[in-house]
Image (tube, rainbow, N blue to C red; front, side):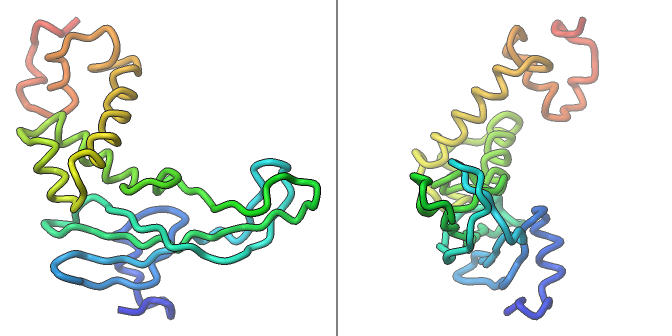
Length: 183
């Protein structure tokens, strides 16, 4: 479905990422494919801060959290900017967005989904990688970073907590009952 004329409002609402517009949506070989771009029109140079000129777009292929039982492929038409300052050492640079890290294969939402599944469900990295359509190492590199970030933060199941305190993060009804980890 071509959405350039505003016909993909439903897909945009379901995708639900602020600052991202869905240009096209369709199904290919059982996977949901989305073509997206950011809505921001200007960007500043990361080196000198001068307002940069739009140069072109580069496509960045990402895997997102599954939609129902279908894997989701996101083609992000990333804007490439050219710094207008002649003295700046940076000539061109790509835009960034919380959707995904630079050079990432997975969206931030896919990483959160997989880390939550490993934390709360009886599953494996292999099974989640298969659901996302990526390799084990691709998923594990991202999940390892997210899991380390979660463990390092203070609060429930963070630093200083017992390992079995993870169940309190999963909405497990048993976790509301008094346990050995309750204060």
